[in-house]
Image (tube, rainbow, N blue to C red; front, side, top):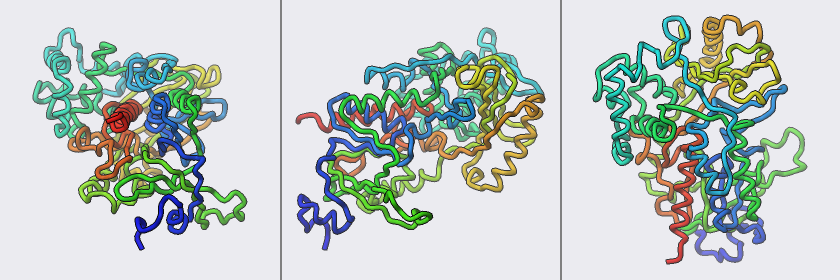
Length: 483
């Protein structure tokens, strides 16, 4: 017997098929799944527009990849978190829409690159100076003149193709491949989507007069999402952590609710992994899945969707970005400037490097006189999934670090080896960005939406998630407007 042969209003079919407990008092206008920048962004925007919202997060904390925690007297983010364009970023725009603002500790002051066995400012790298380099100025002119509509037309073009179409100068090529690596976390500029890099550089030029700049949230990236959670709660909504959604329930092409996991509080010791949690039914006609697209198979009955959509989800799910690296605390300050340190290829690993000192940007992140160092080496996702490759890669990276920073090894108080998979959602490669990402509204399913950096939206990291959230909510408001 199929589901639509039952009386859904009674809840009997839901109880029989899903073991659900009908709890009408928990009904909300919108259920948001995921409490990262995109999920809380959607939740706060909708709540401030009068919707009754609940945001579910299966992890015991909010923020997703943009979270912050205390560790041995330090305040650490989970990755290389900085906010491109700072207080004029897309995240800042989202916060302004809910009556909040970004609180920055400071701004980046440039980039040092490792070349010719020494650190040098990128503005001096191979004598790239806009004041006298005509080839460099040609690219800058093209950035100023290109329209955003034309940028959208570059989703299938690599950064290399676009730059080489303007100049054949190899020094200019190297300069923009560095910037492309920092923006996309990809290794080869043949695989960097021109639209994504150009969009970010163009935005920076418009609002900051430079190709790439970043602000550092005071107290860590968690203070970008905390205000969003506050707005949800202040408007009568809920943000529930440690509570996962088991399934989005769809009937006759419409969202009818979600099944929410209810952990067994007094489960026998060492038996938790074997149990199937009970679920309760929450009625709603609108759900926002603010989770990476590769997690959708855990939430959605994908056989309800067109085959072209599921094929797109399958193909894009394996295309992401990754890195290995270290987060460490030192008892000595290695440098005092507020610059990134980057390399396109380290001597031993051959991998690119991105690193910076959060404690230089925000002294509150480390005890006085101490130094917080965060670094990552972009690599191929298949390598990052291989634990043996990761372990050997981190060992070789350590040798590279002793070469780049000769005095650091004797001052390490603690270190956390790490690998990051899914840093920027879908890899920013030609054919996988912009119009090629899944739309924010599910095809053929009324009331189902998506938000996050694996769906439509532009920008770096948190800005991409915020842009997606803004667009998603605009779509929901349009769909729910009186006809």
